[in-house]
Length: 148
Image (tube, rainbow, N blue to C red; front, side):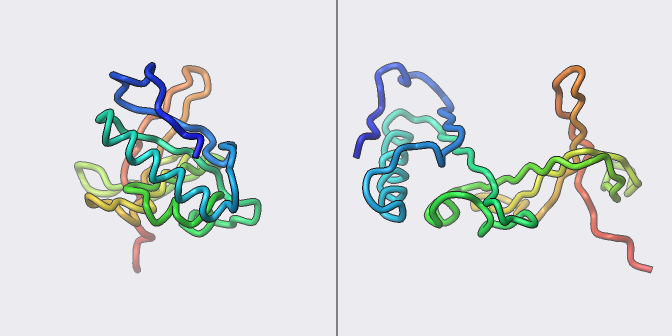
């Protein structure tokens, strides 16, 4: 398999690959992706770093779901954490704050689809992206609809 750590990654804390679906595969995708992940795991262990793999939704994805990620199923199975950032027009959601819940506007939603080593799986967070400053501001935890 052609994935080999290069000397320049020594000392790096995070290695990012965006998008993972652009990585060249040798052989069948369902076996090549598994070998690739095992090689990345060895690299992360050997160098004491984290690896951030970025993928995108499949063309037919209608909503945030583990099965809607592009790439082989091994990415969903072996990942420690899976986050899905959704861009949308500004909308109002019920947000949990330190003082209770309130209605707040946001233009991004971050879905925590998987959180193997901590709380949060299934939660949604509201964010507001400011295009002028290119910054993302956390609004808070999105709560379900208020029951009457």
